Image (tube, rainbow, N blue to C red; front, top):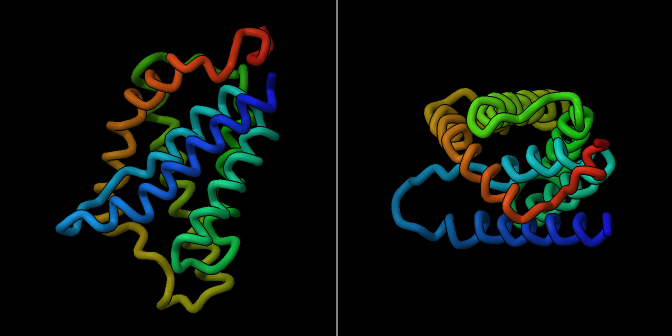
Length: 168
């Protein structure tokens, strides 16, 4: 039962990665879209635990690496780290419908930016690093926070974890 839920959420996240990398980039203008895979990864990791969060984060990050111009392993490391950290909170915090999803996703977006800066500073030329702490990043942060309660509510309706999965 556990493997089928992991497989289904990973497939959903991979489809969203493909949509974000292809369809969303073809829209006119310079729109900034929320990182839906990050929001789903935070929800899934918190509900299912470290190992499943790491696996889905790694596979999603690998797909992002493949579909983008980032160096191999860049997004994989970031998403695996997020999956591990938020999987560590499994069963330790109560998630209300609005406040905690916003706080958790805000922290995950900031963690993603910090990891991107760190990886760029250590392994890539500093001038080729990501534009973190810019207006586009601020817009993505706000959009992620706004989308978080809605995505968490939507994901709860699919019942990707049960009471016994949560340790109750």
